[in-house]
Length: 416
Image 1 (spheres, rainbow, N blue to C red):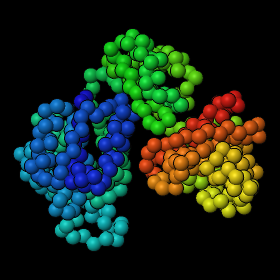
Image 2 (cartoon, rainbow, N blue to C red; image 1 turned 180 degrees about the vertical axis):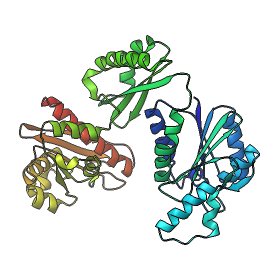
Image 3 (cartoon, helix red, strand yellow; image 1 turned 45 degrees about the horizontal axis):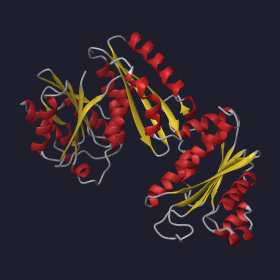
Image 4 (cartoon, rainbow, N blue to C red; image 1 turned 90 degrees about the vertical axis):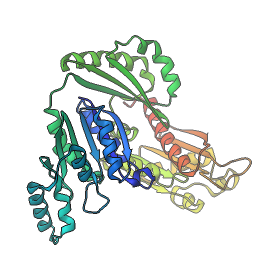
């Protein structure tokens, strides 16, 4: 089943809005053994949408459309679909009934502008929108399937998960698409490729290895495309284990999870409490850790000690140390770890201090100089980076490298 995606919206093309929908659609489809073969983005124009539909219609069996549904005059997807399919644009009774019920529950008046959303190509099936007012559309036309969904991310995700995917899964397929993901840390993509090159070259053609690099981490995605699910599962598992063995020393997680989730698993399993003492990262590490549900079971808390007097009063960093070594120093981040361990009664702590930019540097400590530390009762590890990016990117990198430092320390201590 070849699936393509048409994204509609001037705001996407102008860069005013980031297209998070395409990524989420890809994730949800891939989790069900489906995938996006091609994506096209067009503006809010009848002609552009129609051209996009025609282009993708010649390349895919299923065309998903994101955006262009709603009550305003720049919401043109339904009209474009109707014109493309040569059908009248008519009021869908089911969509109208659902919309009226929704507006009544919300205590909102009904007007003609709202009712425009109920107009769709004649013969199309309306897809209920439990999170908003714009219904989706399921339209079969000339051996192709067109599925239009609203562009509001949470509305699209809910409709895709509960309306579209269950129906797609019941359609006939010629095979199955399965994948396994491995998260590695602290190794460059090129170094991973060097380790795996000869092994990957020996893979049967039904298996594909993809490298997904990010700051400090690389995901390895192994995909199998085979006629039978049982055959694909057995082969995929066997090849995945071979791959994992070759990079065992840098494996963070043997599933598609983030560094934050994996650290949470390790801390929770070993009954360890974590605390943080941040300066240049400004709470970014704390935010990253607490983005995982259940973080309260292993994260004690943290302090953003941006000013030196807070480092002194809250973390117990000696004033003389700051005078002689400065805040951006190995001695300071080590002292911050000690202070966080004591202040929060934690088992392990992270600290950061640096110059994120664009100003504040000096010849001895240029912009991008960042000191990180992680430690417990057995000792403290510290590391210095000279980051070359802008402020936002430097903070992001310092956060990621701090989590890697924690992962390395936990691994050295024997925690798995």
